[in-house]
Amino acid sequence: MHWESMPPSDGPCSSEPRPGDPPPEGAAQRPYRILLVEDHLMSGDILVRRLRRRGYQVLWAQDGAEGVAMAASLQPDLVLMDLNLPVLDGIEAMERLKAMPATQGIPVIALTAHVTPEAQRRCLQAGAEAWEGKPVNFERLLARIVSIQVSQRPCATTDGS
Image (cartoon, rainbow, N blue to C red; front, side, top):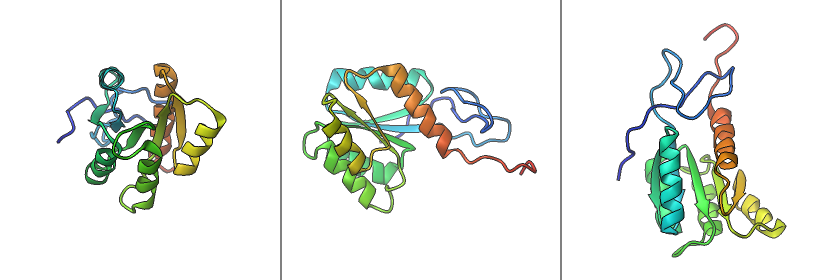
């Protein structure tokens, strides 16, 4: 498995980046990598295509166990995790990611059709940074991704270093 090459999406810390913006001169050229863990083929395909069009590298796992294994080996920048998954459900998969030193720092956005306060609480308790209801509002999801992306970016010091 590999990440497909896509344009980089890093931007300066001082302004809000948009997915697909070129990095500032001298910045790292590595694109932002997202692991989607989703078993529904149509939903997964739509999300993968839309994210790739925005300049993200996207890899797709179709069950929770595969998602945990791929996150550990590939170290994505972000995981989008469905909750209702075969083999290992999304809550348990998130708990495993947060329990492993190699993956505990990878932010997770939970995706769920169960948009209840209880589902939100369970997602956040399992370690999700955010959650998004299904059907996914892509622009809202994209805003959450960009917000997490900005929070991960190291900023230069005031002396320019």
